Length: 278
Image (cartoon, rainbow, N blue to C red; front, side, top):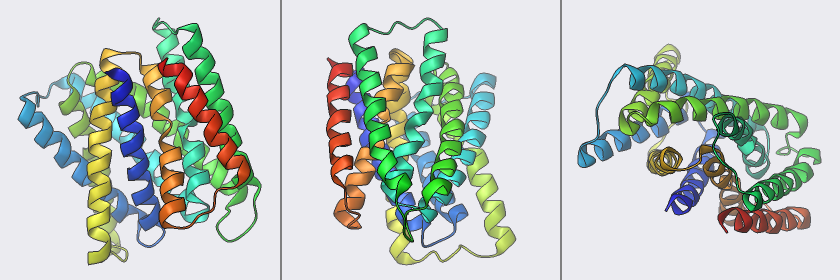
């Protein structure tokens, strides 16, 4: 069950990453985060009400707010990376954030089977193979080293957020996740009011961005449900497959070509995944 939830999170987060990355090139980053984060918050509230688990206490509020601020930093940096480079490359680097929850998982004594450990190493090798060709490429949407550094910065924020939100969600999932969207929505609203503009938002972009917010919300519920009842390190590694989903969607909808090394890297990642879930 935990494996299915983690893989569902990877699929949903990949769709969210594609949606925000695509439209983040056209409209204000603050508007993108505001809509997707606001809709995700609504998903947390509605799901919590439907399950009867929407409660708040001090632990939820503190962990949620801190995790939300960390996610905000990650979102800003990854959207900058998307605007400067290929979606597949930027999204492929960001999941290096799993190093932080994986280290945390080992420090708190969560067991890691040998075969799963081998699979994790294989997945990392595949992700590196996936990223390097794009990081070295030239052109208007290659981004080069700037894209890489922005994505690495986002990974540090995202990985730290996972640890903080995992701690909070073990007390109450929906309260923590709802609070995590408060700082993001508040800061983005302030930026929108400060600029007195929604940054090019149109009727054509509202629905896709809202859909990406639904994907973010459902993916986060799946991820933290799996992490709370399983191993946060292993769950994080499986969820790190989201860039593969993003790259495939970019290939299908934006015609971003996948090179032979990227296809080979995809195969390596899938082999590693099979070892982790075996």
